[in-house]
Length: 322
Ligand code: TXA
Ligand code: MG
Image 1 (cartoon, rainbow, N blue to C red):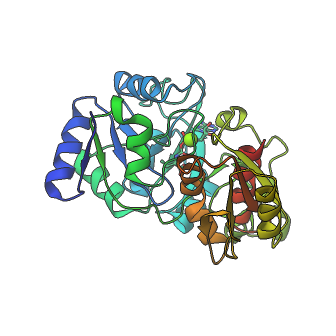
Image 2 (image 1 turned 30 degrees about the horizontal axis):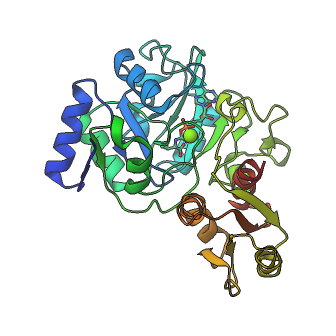
């Protein structure tokens, strides 16, 4: 049975000891909770795949304590990667680069590349320091479930298969990192995430080398799998149209939940209410889980503009609604 640990010195030491003996621990990051293990130990990584029920060809993200450690896991730091790392790390940007020889192929799902990031969360940083090496960590949900943004979500999904989760509270960002192929001269976005396409442009010198949406968006293996599947129906409506649509569905006798900027009308469960798009991002996965717990049949969610983190939010909402 899982133990939820406070991330104090004692808790961090227990977690680091588990990691050093090839075990797996739940770890908060600024985006979502991760399921962490020694990135360089194939047996430890095999445990992550088993616990998550994750397909073997879906590679993991390797987390580093600092940019200085990049050389331990990649074969080459391209000039583009160096600029992106300098600008965005620590933070929710994952760089795909040619893998170094120390990284076992189980970590990379058999690919010649490895995905790496330096997380911007005090508990993740402290755990990386205490462990003293790279930690592979996928989101700590069971495969096909929404990513966890609290320790309680990790317990709900993986509690029976995990010894320890460090409790860092609710994740401040709430959606996963942006995954970028940084092997070339322009960043190619492989997975939408909390760092906006528009913001990646700050590191490119000339206007014509602006970041492009990948022609093969979906080249990140994980985006092929069905994801973010709540147990209730999710209906996406236009911005502002949520309360009226929710009221109409409720009048048909359905058990309806609402995620919107406005209050829920009578008879509708207010699952989440937010001020702006980053507030929605922060609450999104919790809202999907809360809707299930409230036995909501239809969750009405308002669309947001596809700029900034809104792009990732809409990507996740479309998958949930599919
Ligand atoms: O914010 C995050 O990225 C969180 C926290 C825990 O760091 N992690 C996370 O990991 O979302 P996961 O495993 O749920 O998603 C990793 C994504 C998957 O879509 C995977 O296919 C992709 O990154 N990925 C990993 N290695 C890759 C590689 N070498 N080439 C392309 N995509 C890769
Ligand atoms: Mg995931």
